Image (tube, rainbow, N blue to C red; front, top):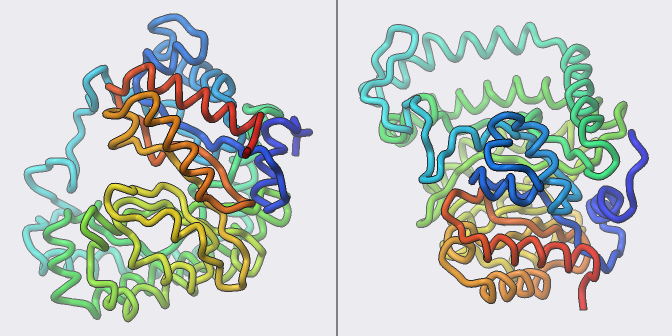
Length: 377
């Protein structure tokens, strides 16, 4: 590990270990509008497209990011001033027809057929052939490379390599997948079980990587399971066919002392106690406008009694695009006031899409700097 600067990366490390600090560290903020990235980085118009990695990193350092887990400097290249400009259409992004391995996915029975004919055998083979030593070294090489790029200013948080069973709507499309989920729960559970079998092997390697590489023991799990109304399926079905496999898949990293937190999209309140019971110790995201009770969540405890790690964010769907600078300032103060006394990071609820007024972004960056340097009142 590189020697960390105490006013940035070290503050993040202290906070993820719940060491008392008056200052509140900044989590990454992911801005998608090129002009805003360039302005904050001190770059010229057009520089981001010429050097996305260099300009994006300069922007993160300029705004005072203390901890960055998801390193996606090329991601805003898919955006123009008016929004998404990518041409690809997938199962959940407008594809007229989904065809997998020569099979047209035109109903729930086709989902089941594809799972049983192609996915289940592939998962069994992957479990049998999994090389834990190789996976450990891949993880370590990846994390070390990015931390070297960051230098001592920003702490690289692990991301993208702890596995667990997920919904497959991204493969089959929402309608066909969730009809299959409702009609064929035994097939869905078999899918979750096989995913968990592979995840256990992967996560044993991940646990070794945390230990051997002295990696920061904080990891954000990221899978959308809710919309603005609530979970995408009845939580009672999750209790029966998903949660047991989810919990066992995470046992290796939980036993290694890794603090797992969950990225929240939509109204995930019904999932909060279930995720805590499975061993998670915090949350990130929070769509307050959809019913996420931030103050209540921050008052909860982990299963072992620990305080939660919370990555609190200014809303990217209401406050930043539609509010005023005063609203941004007020929301930051509310997040700090109602957040946990240790283990609190500040950021945004998700990616900041094009169209957010510059004055609101400037107020956000100034507010993050205030709490990072001045701290709580």
